[in-house]
Length: 148
Image 1 (tube, rainbow, N blue to C red):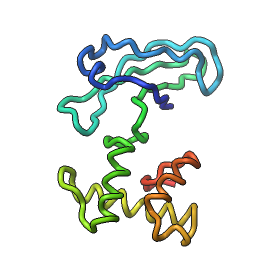
Image 2 (cartoon, rainbow, N blue to C red):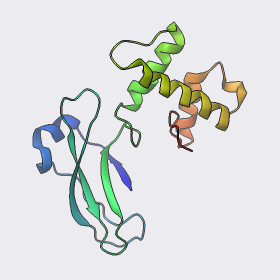
Image 3 (cartoon, rainbow, N blue to C red):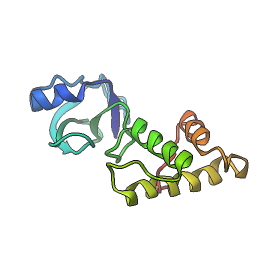
Image 4 (spheres, one colour):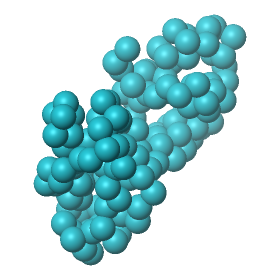
């Protein structure tokens, strides 16, 4: 299970495993009121030269592992939501990807967005993919995911 929290990534890099991550008050799966520390896991994010140490917690009752993640990132994505949206928007306006990231990765996002827009919103959004990205976010969906 992943919990997003408002944190400053630069502070996480500076403090490493000493960063004071907030402890979840309860297990989100079974509602037990005490979770134990379960170490850290390294995760890479775009724009940073080193992996971040993200805090993990474990529920003693059900065994659920809870991982903390900085707000502004989709689960299992290294690029921020803002970066993904702005790059797709740039591509749709100019016909070219902005430099800096692999084109294949950005194509993956765009193809996934088109598939998800068609699946969840229908063909009427075909010419308004940036708006559709925002609409899928409002629905609580990840607009650029390949998994269903």
